[in-house]
Amino acid sequence: MTTLQRINKHPPQELQDIAENPPGQCSVGPVGNDLFHCQATIMGPKGSPFEGGLFDLAIDFPEDYPFKPPHIRFKTPIYHMNIDVDGEICMDILDSEWSPGFSLSKVLVMIVALLDDPNPDDPLRWNLSREYKNDKASYAKNARRWTHMYANN
Image (cartoon, rainbow, N blue to C red; front, top):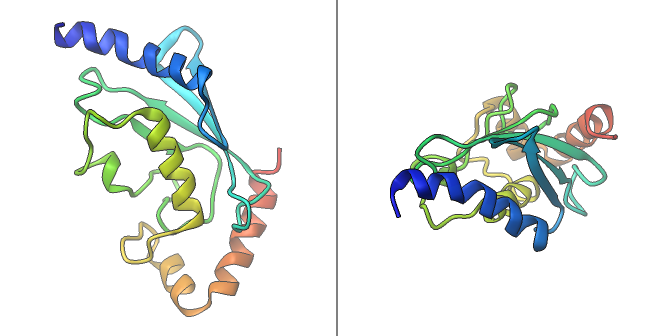
């Protein structure tokens, strides 16, 4: 199978797999008929400050996917140290640790896990990392407030 054939097959196959066996707390589908541009919705994990929130993400597959990671960003504003104000996500698997063996479903599950278990040692927003390290209750309160303001659909 040529690279082009794999690329043309891979996102539709992944979307079909997700439709048949959706990952917990996530849904995903193409934007219009363009299978290389998708939108996902994830539910905030129970017991986290994001519980009850619905967060929209934009997913763009590069031409050389699955050999390069998809570009995934939050469209819904979120108060999270590993997600910047533009929605960019700081996760190694979306950059240097990407593997063609990762599926979109697995990546979405890992993003949900990041909401519940942030990484204060690799933040995109240093001020939120400091708040989390110094006053977790304040961080959680602010995250809940943002979830209520922006992610309560």
